[in-house]
Length: 530
Image: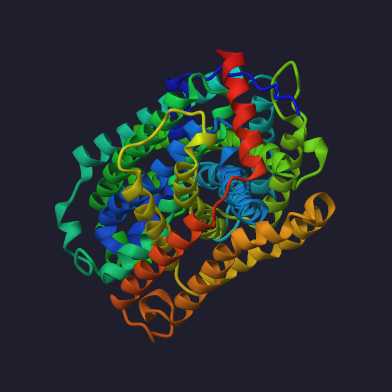
């Protein structure tokens, strides 16, 4: 199928796409939720999360340079192992990312509920959005849709402006609260610096919104099909977006911890309940100018991420169609705009379904994080499979240290998955497995003869997911398990087993037909658009 996508996005705009995706509703809620789980030690959670996501992101950065594919995140497993791994990782990734669109709209509505108007207070009851709140969220989703519908350049310009604004507002929050209300005693009072120990810190990495926030590093990869000089710009955008966002989030966590009032924290960090965390802090300290900025940013920051994810999820559906698991209509790209419009319409419908089913920011963030981690697991393995078959890869990109970075990235994804705690780990994995009937239908329809080979190449992934669920179930009680494997020893078991499955996964990779076709098409596309 002819690729009508145009390579119009430069390095700066691509980096802004990544940062714009990362700095969304996560910064408005993440520091508060992490503090509830880990107390002041949530600072460690953000640092650990940044480092671990960087290991994972570097693997995908090299993949993005190798294959500047639209919707690349859902295609690498297909290229390295065939249909089974490609489908499972792509399905998990799409589930996680498409649900972010309504979540960001809900985040805006939830923050708007703190505006000083009677009608605003009716939007959110502390647990879920009202009908009026849902209607505002639906309107925002439609805005995201049309900002992406016409041209890629319009999306890039709007996203760059919004992202610059995203830097300004967090900077104002950090400076404003630290200068006027910072209390260093908050780091040692109310249960001490680490009230829930290291298990609290590690659980915060997984489910407090940290992994959810950093999901945005995928956006430059999924937009790689429209990037100028993708071999250089895609990896650069991924690394810079993770590091820039990591610095911002650590500073925001320090600011939030130091800015909490005694009345908020007197019953312990776990009992701090805020609808609009930073806005509530600003109001408590009488910083009216900051409250106004935050009320405005309550729409801008989540909407910027919503706009970006509307773009990237359309490319993911396009990529899954190219893998052979969605109807042909979703592979159509508008010749004039270079945008996969049928895929956008499909995601719009799915977004409304998620909006109806999950009516608050907190209801989906943990599920999104665990689902995304499942899709992350294939990246470090795929990149090393391709290194074994460099003769089929025309890309000159090779990130130094990848033989060490890749296994560390795989171990990191397994660890963060485990930290998500039982039974959430089991429930989310079940959601992923529910998608298998779609795979079997298209496999039977399109490539029944190749099923045996693809199944053999992908069986390691299914067994690994089952193994991780089992370890989560019998693991430390600190992560919801039966404590058959106590705290500390569980980390050792996961690390050793992850290395074993990593080796198995790399050795299971082969030179698939999808790899040959994808590499040839991408090479031609890059040459044509230079």
